[in-house]
Every structure is written in C-alpha cells, then in structure tokens.
Amino acid sequence: MIVLFTDFGYEGPYVGQVKAVLAANAPGVTVIDLMHDAPAYAVAPAAFLLPALAAEFPLRSVFLAVVDPGVGGTRKSLVVEAAGRWFVGPDNGLFEVLLRRGEWRCWEIVWRPARLSSTFHGRDLFAPVAAALACGGSPEAIGCVPVSPTRSQEWPDDLGEVIYVDRYGNLVTGLRAASVHRGARLGIADRSVAFARTFSDMPAGHAFWHENSNGLVEIAVNRGRADLILGGIGTKVALIASDHHA
Image (cartoon, rainbow, N blue to C red; front, top):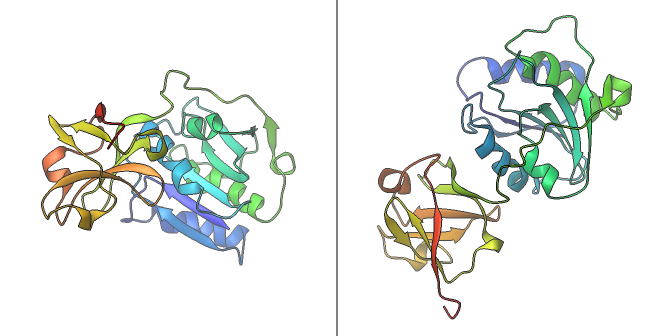
C-alpha cells in the first residue's frame, strides 16, 4: 500500500501526475489519498500531523510524504523506516516527530532518474522510490545509502498550536490528547475552553476541546466553525488551568 500525504492540493495536475508514476512503477499496488491539503509550506505542523495519521495504516505501508518548500535546494531526499512503516520525502524536518517516537533507520536517496525536475521531486524522485519499496525493494537495492537525518531538536515534543483545519472548521492541534488532563482548560485567542467528550455534550454554538479520532487535541464548536471565531493554522494553544478533580 502507498499512502499519499502532501500539500499539493486537490486542484490541478500534480496529484494525478504522481499517481501516474506510481501506476507505471507499482501496477496493482493500492494507492490511498490520505491528504493533499496538509498546511502549505508548513513543515512543522505537517510533521506533528503525520505520525498521528500514519498510525491508522497497516505495517509496511509506504508513505509518500511531501511538504517541501525547499525542493530543488540543498536538502537531502530520504527513505525512513519508523513505526513499522516506510516514509519517503524531504530531509527538512517532516519526519522529525516520527524519529522521536520510536526506533528508526534512515537512508539518503542518491539514485537519480533520467528526468528530475528541480521543482517536482514528488513525481520524479519520491514516487519511483516509493513504488519500488511497495514492490518489495530494499533501500540499498534502489539507490539509497544510510545517513543521519537533519534534526530539529528545538521543536517541542507536543506542539501547542493549530496544525490543521478540517472542512467543518475544527482546529486540530499538535498536542497529544493523552498528555493533557481532561480537567484542563485550554487558552486560544483570548478564550478559555473546557473538555467535552463529544460534540453533543455541549450546547450548540459552544466551543470545547476533545480527543479527536487520531488521538490529538482538537478544538471545536458544536454545530459551528471554530476557525471563524478562534483562528486557523498557527494559532497558539496553551494549557491555562487544570482541575485534577474534574
């Protein structure tokens, strides 16, 4: 299985061109569009989002992950094995959070195709490598060498900001819900929101936070759009109070 995680958007030819390469190089392999609306150019939010989403997929799945504002520059191209899955993409911090949360191995992609656009490594470089891995190839066999990836050690283990806004206007944060006590209140945009288990536990129009289906803290408004009143990607979220008896 090949899983696509990109900021390409659903408009235009880019996703289709990547899929064409995958179909030619890995015929019969299932390709899943996980998301193509990862925060554009925003490597850190995507890095915190990717592990939460990847955990839902079978072991040995191959993730073609591209949020790559430095495409064509000096950053390396990587294959990472982490959490029992493969990840192919740029060495720009996108895999930092994955590396922190378990054992991993990493290779640099030194193979180059006959055609390599300076602005579309997702199609010309990452897609053929992802296809080869999905067909059972090893990193060494497909032109990769062991490497130590660039690390972003200054990043926190949990990111206290909004990293994604879904179609309902719900605000997904980079905080793992397991690390936040249910009695905590969270501060966002000069407001304080309390925990609720699900939407219907709050009156219509009221904001709250909950553990979303991928294990992250999400701030929502029952039957409303949190993004319109609380902010969007990059908005800071802080723990402001915790009643451990709540």
